[in-house]
Length: 496
Ligand code: HEM
Image 1 (tube, rainbow, N blue to C red):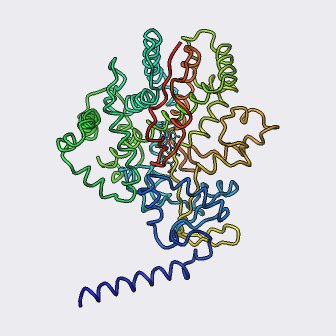
Image 2 (cartoon, rainbow, N blue to C red; image 1 turned 30 degrees about the horizontal axis):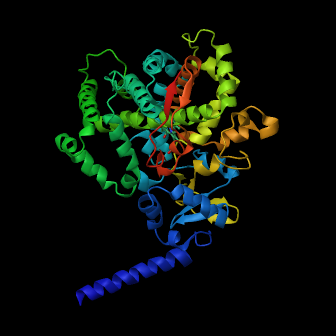
Image 3 (cartoon, rainbow, N blue to C red; image 1 turned 90 degrees about the vertical axis):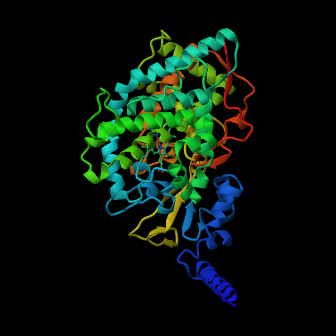
């Protein structure tokens, strides 16, 4: 009897909720699938059961329902270039908070990138930003070039041996070595061994592919973080390098916090400790989360953009020819690579990078913002305070009105405004690096790495694709970052 009553009341509560969400909720008039209006299980289904296909489902939904679609009980997704600027803009009067239910997804809930409220975000970002500012990144250039030279000497060896090289892992290792070398007492030094150990790469890739699970079940982080390292190692031996790196740096980070550190490096930990942040923002856990968020943010993102650019350039002889000619003239001595600002002034190289960023997407998951205080209007729809509003790079970057034949890689889009339309408008619409006050903080570092790698690779080597086609590079699944199809073996090239 008790069971029957419990069951009956659960059903009654559920039906009432369903009725409210479908017929009384402030978003009831926004078009969209009724299942999505009922429950966030709709999102979970595409994230988990469909392995990360929600962004592609959103394309279908917009085709069917128009520019605004209700994709959750309290969320609308908007596909409209004119709205993107409003979406990202934030001010005191006009707050854009992040979506609280996803705060734990990255496992660093107290880092700038995961901070929910816009005022706390502003303070944290202001403290971190100088460490990644443009002049600071110029000072990191020798470190960056050192890692790129390591890649170049590997390619030299492959040129002699005729061996096939896979570039995605190399770039991931390079970007991780760079950010850890710059920001931590001890760098990862993943490129230091002649034979690359793929353990770290496989471990990180597995972790990345589970990010949507962490979004829906944040307690998984609690379990993972609470697990003794020896258990984790038993379950996943490939975690060894990452765990060792973490253990050694954590010990030194404790030394830095307690003033016992004897090294000379000025790490991001020193930087944050000497920032004007209040003491409660300078505890060990927060500082550690902020610092390690950079490792997560600055590895695969850079590798993926480089792979996208290099694949498309190699696939198209005209583009390759135009690029190598420009580099040959601008860099007379291939072993004297000019600084990034000189490279960034080369029109074709810049166009190749811009188009690569457009195609690479950066983050495939939608960006979600809420305004806690104000109603946002979109057309005739009133979106009350607290409504989750989202936009996606997959849609913005591929808007056919701004980017005709969006699936094609056409650097000329960024050169010929008369033929391809206003550059500023296009730039605003490519949201690979996000936008507004939460736009990527590592963009100077990312651009520097990307420009320098492309200059070295295309000035010194003749690369050819090896059994790699578009499917191996194109985003196919959402794991926050783009994931390629299961059979992708990365970006494989031979060197002549
Ligand atoms: C091509 C490479 C990169 C891409 C495509 C990229 C993309 C992005 C995007 C889309 C965001 C905004 C996330 C959001 O609004 O939820 C972001 C934020 C961020 N990125 Fe990057 N990123 C790249 C490289 C880097 C690098 C190299 C670093 C530093 C090591 C970095 C550090 C950050 C940080 C700290 C944030 C948080 C900014 C904030 O919340 O204020 N990123 N990135």
